[in-house]
Length: 310
Image (cartoon, rainbow, N blue to C red):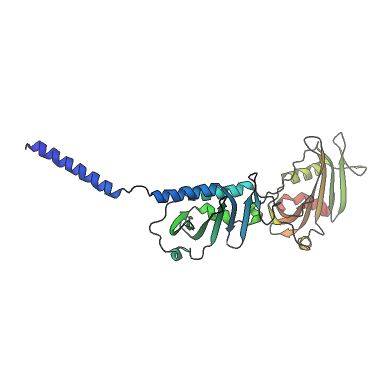
């Protein structure tokens, strides 16, 4: 055999050997695993109940026929729909996660007593539970799934953050209207200095009773309150006596604004300011019994005028 032919055959043999070795290291997809992932994803997508333990409390949610989610303990609670969807979307992406081959002992990863857990139930009635354990250095979390109990997975850090919030963190907060001078008809401010009532005339002048008022002071007060925002909810449907503990039965200030909205309908907005909590004040909005918190820095002029008068 000619030398160049021997060289060609040798090269061909090496190529075939390399191909054989590569084939030995390549595994066909696990059809059973793919089926499990597909089933899990479908169940999560069709979930109509969701519950999770966030480390201190278990919260339960149900989805109505119109696709709206509700807090099971109080369906009237103003629940942020996007918050529930973010949780479900995050869990949905985890259905395709691959097990961690090096992780075999649940106890070693904080999974014998999970810090947090989440369960979804589909329309078929089957429940899928995710349990979260210790945290990776990068912030992600070790996780187990009830449909593959012997495997350990990695869950994204965002899921732990989403589940760590209280029900009040998932509440739709009221918006303070933005008042323009031509919308407002009257402003009433009650506080330690008594009660002051300001009315706006058609020519733009302001009066306190029959006396001409300092319009700049009134406009500055309206500008301050228009820029304010509710920071958080403190107590939803509080028990008897809680408003007193929060200083709301004898408020530091009560602001009432009568105004015309964009469709020329007259409305009244009332803000009741109670005691101090941290860097904020307890507050009530209109007839809502929920106790909220407003940053103190957003109420400087209102509280000053309420206590000192004009």
